[in-house]
Length: 252
Image (cartoon, rainbow, N blue to C red; front, side, top):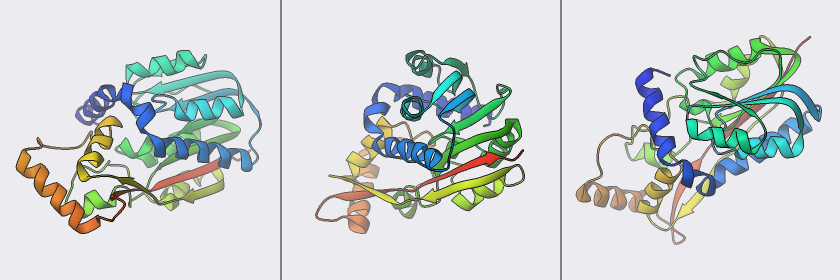
């Protein structure tokens, strides 16, 4: 990330750190789905060295440690608050921007859920992970695809995360060094009573890091009217999540 973008993302997720865990229902689903895909692909039940970047409040960490054993588990996050996640799971903590920090060596597993969309160059990070993995090591990564928050995009929002990408792009990024064992995507609608509740959800999960400008009363009223007109249903207003994921193994 650029220093300016990195700082903005860090501040946004730091503000929402306490509310994120309970509000991030979709991220819980993604973490569990990624671990299931890793298991179904034939990953071993014990890893010597493993590295998770973008651990946050620990949705993926929980799923991984419930399914696998680790001799050495290192967690990373841009937000220093995530040190508590590492402590809770008996892991070491490596703070900082995964795009610029030095990774642990000899990893048998690199994992990440719902993080790469915030990177300026997620493909470069995936290629680095593929290169750093030990022979026979595993990669399990999820992000979000181009239909993420499509309702907001159709209403003209410019606040999309910079690294949204198709699942095929994830697979292509690692294909030189890894064999892709599984890949998938889903489009999941989450309903809210009103457009204002959509904005509250985004604030609680910290995903408004690229939002620009203040919400005046007139701007908020116009947003609500346009959202209901375009997407309103009897059950409420939808917000689309578009998770994408891959599981791959290093050759050799």
